[in-house]
Each structure stands twice: as structure tokens, then as C-alpha cells.
Length: 149
Image (cartoon, rainbow, N blue to C red; front, side, top):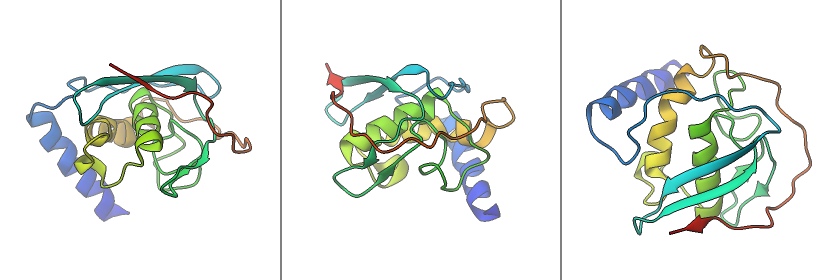
């Protein structure tokens, strides 16, 4: 775990030093059960948005990724994370990843910038007071799709 944290800290420092699609470097906490809008830029350069419920459980996507506790910084409800932190950037990354079957972290063509934007949230969200109790909802697939324009 220490190696992972050091790697994230190093890549976060590099991300701060170079321009990226997401320029904002701050942590915005989200409340489980609240409605939030995820935003990301896809590989075609279009801005995509999706509005849903923070902490939702979409089950697995078509690539087999597990998407419970959407918006939590870390994999699903139980994956590696520093507390059960829910933030705007982690929400955007989770939703982008679910709909785009993302993989490869920052190198993913659709969700890489969202991943990079969520790094500081993963590292600092606990300190910023974004940790809360994970929901335990049953999996329900989303009924709407993102809008990209």
C-alpha cells in the first residue's frame, strides 16, 4: 500500500506541473444519496455529462468492472481507498469508466483525464472530510445514457 501511495503522490505532482484536460485541482465532497452530474471529455473531444445518485450501485459493466458505491475514491465499496471518500472527481471518473468500459487509469482514451483529476481526491479526500458510510444498495443498472456534445 505504501508503494501505491508513493506512486500516486509522484504522479499527482507531475499532473500538477503539466496542463491537462481537467485543470481544477481541488477536492469537492459529495454526499451519498445526493444527485450529482459527472462530466468528462471523451476520446472524440466531446464533453459528456450524466446525472445520477452518488453511492449508486450499477453492478458490473459490460467489461466486467464492478461499479458499486459510485463516486467513492477507490474500487467499488470495498476496494483500496483512504476511507470511504466520495468526491466530484471520483464520481466523474466512475461514471465515465462504467459507460466507456475504461481501463488503464490515466492512459484510457475516454476516462484518463478524469482518472488524473481524481488522484488528488483519492489522496486528500479523507483530510478534507469527504469520508462517510458506504451504502449497501442492491445493483440496479442505469436507465439513461450520458449525453456527449
